[in-house]
Image (cartoon, rainbow over all chains, first blue to last red):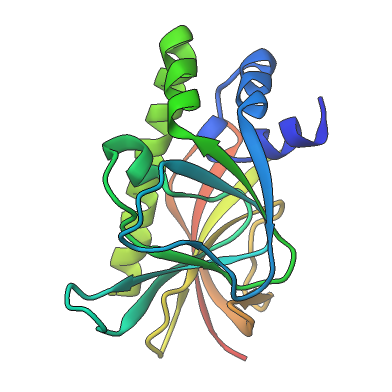
Length: 149
Length: 65
């Protein structure tokens, strides 16, 4: 297995996929690198990529509904975590702003259409990833409940 | 495949969002972790939900310093 396959295998999102299925995911993934402070997604923007954090850290923050309202960090995400999954599932605008908080933060970006095409061709892959995505959203909710934010 | 520990780090005693990340080893009380450019000390570790295959799901409470 290559480095990317190993990176993806260590992300819960892809737990349960076969080596061939992991290679299919690797085939639609694009590596992106960010310095500390760079914005990866901006709340309200139209974008349909899912991101997997391979190295470094990102901060997820939310702004209030009124223009100019303060933003509030809701979680930091490190290795193996995903963000952008809401836009991938519901096709809505970005629900949060995500910034890199560490130099040399590396993420894998997966576009919605390529991912959905893969799910349509391979229902096992689609089931496993969607199941894991639901489990990840559940884990994030548990974390947020524990932080009281 | 070796175990992977998905950890929810929650900061005690301050308004901080905490962090979620995967680690190769389970956190232990007294460990130092870096979150958002700051250093924290682990003060408590619990299983958050039962493990699934090689993934273990933990909750660690940390404090500044």
